[in-house]
Amino acid sequence: MIVVMEPGASRESVEAVEMRIRAAGLDVHRSRGVERTLVGAIGDERILEPGCFESMPGVERAVRVVRPYRLVSREWHPGTTVVDVGGAAIGGREVQVIAGPCSVETDGQMAEAADAVARGGARLMRGGAFKPRTSPYAFQGHGIEGLRMLGRAAARHGLPVVTELMDVRMLDTFLAEGVDAIQIGTRNMQNFDLLKAVGRVDVPVVLKRGMSATIAEWLMAAEYVAAGGNHRIVLCERGIRTHETAYRNVLDVTAIPYVKRESHLPVIVDPSHAGGKAWMVEALACAAVAAGADGLLIEVHPCPREAWCDADQALAPDAFGSLMARLAAVAAAVGRVLAPAPEARTPARIAGETALPA
Ligand code: PEP
Ligand code: MN
Image (cartoon, protein in one colour):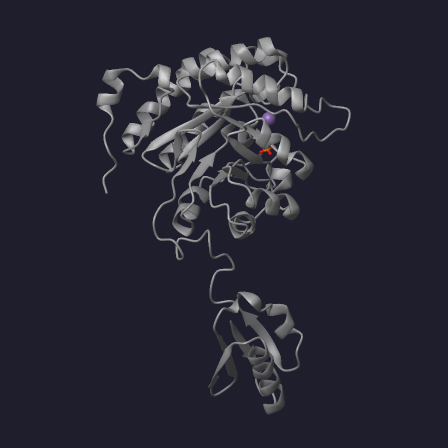
């Protein structure tokens, strides 16, 4: 951290800043210029708060030099992390698709959805059993029974499941039900107790970006999970709120290359919640893969107009199938391969896969 003193700051105020830095166990480097003095804190500056210095007499501002997050940064781990979710690798050369309905409704709906997901070639299945709804009168999800329906449907095709955890008290149930990846939704990205709790377990976490979160806040949320010991984190960009009202959210495509440079964690994209309309999903999904996304989270429903939640944005099975075909071409164009579900794999497809250039 560098503390910039005001022009003409007294010797006492410079010394008070230096004392405070030393009291925190860091060393001091003073640099006296023609107009002002700079005081550098040498050591792990993450324990220092700029605001503590900015409220001191004679201080103009305090600026961090290093990133506030460490474990999730590429600076800390220059390699690229691959997260295994029930046998599907996220972050490698394969682009993984997680698909399924917004909410788990009935066994019949889930069985049809699972068939569509597997037929389309997705490798993982999603479905919400605990739903974060804006209105308390809207369908809130089937809860534990919903988890079981999701598990039964996905088991038809051996698909690992991804589902949202909202309440820390349900974590043990998620583990007992064998959830393969825990989704933390946009509304809970800064629920720090929830982040700490999932940081203590050995189950992958799909961490969605808060709808108004900066990238630094998103990575700090991931740091909470990593700090607890769980490094199996997949970041998910799902669109952010801006002044634009024409569509549900703005997909921040820029975040994809930025976060992949800043962090070693895999980054996936949810085009469904970004655009909020089924007809936008294909364009946004293609853009995401072209920009380097490691996977996609897509809402698919056997009959979208009858969906109990997010009906406007769900893809029907046919539309999902054609989207997957286009995605395979986009993935190939950027040196990736769309990972097919085990039953969709044929020897010809496997033989056609090529490794990413090193
Ligand atoms: C969801 O995936 O169904 C969901 C509620 O997503 P988000 O948290 O991004 O709104
Ligand atoms: Mn949804």
